[in-house]
Every structure is written in C-alpha cells, then in structure tokens.
Length: 123
Image (cartoon, rainbow, N blue to C red; front, side, top):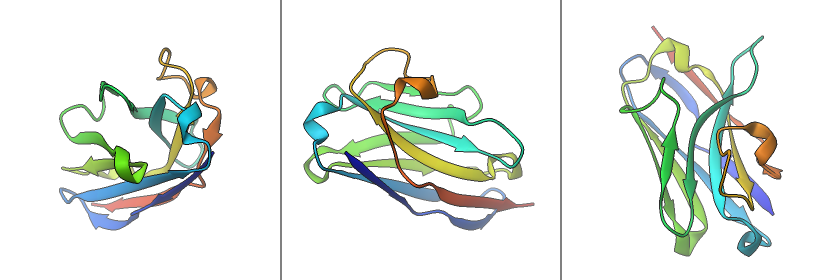
C-alpha cells in the first residue's frame, strides 16, 4: 500500500487547511486510516483516525471540534479538514494505514506510512 499526503502549507492562526491522503496498491488489506503529526523535537502524536467501512472516527483531545476526518472511498482518499488552526498545530502531518481496527491512536498499529506534508501556522 502506498500513501500520498498533500495539502499542507503556511496559514495564519484561525485559518483552515484541508489535507488529503490518497491510497494505492492493496488497499483492500487495510481497515483504517489515521493522521499523525510530528513537531520539531517532539514525538509523533496521534491526530485522528477513521475506519473505512463504517466511517467511525477518533480524535485527539487537542483537535476534537476543530478537525474533521473523512473518506471518499471511491477515490481511496482520506481528508483532514482543519479549522481554527493555532501555532501549536504546526508540524509535519503523516497519513498511515492499518489492517487493524483497534488501538488506532498508537503509531505502532499502522503498517503503512505516507511521506508527510508540512503545516505551518503563523501567529
């Protein structure tokens, strides 16, 4: 499975961005997709996840209510709509895929990773 993330950029605080992650290859082997982010000097942290087939979503407390994860199954695409962005959201955002449906908040659960897209929020 190959994952391609896109949509990052430079945005002012309070603004919005939409990230996309397109999956190709043996996507039928995956059950869920997730977004993680990593700021300089920090560990990679969970942002959001979604289970393909039922659309069940999970969010980190820090983004709940501001970010929305969704899929376009026909296009094998996951999106992350990010609203009310703040400087602390600045990070490289990675999408990931897994054949599991549990422990989706843990990076170790995921088998496939995209290359990451930079999001920078200026104050």
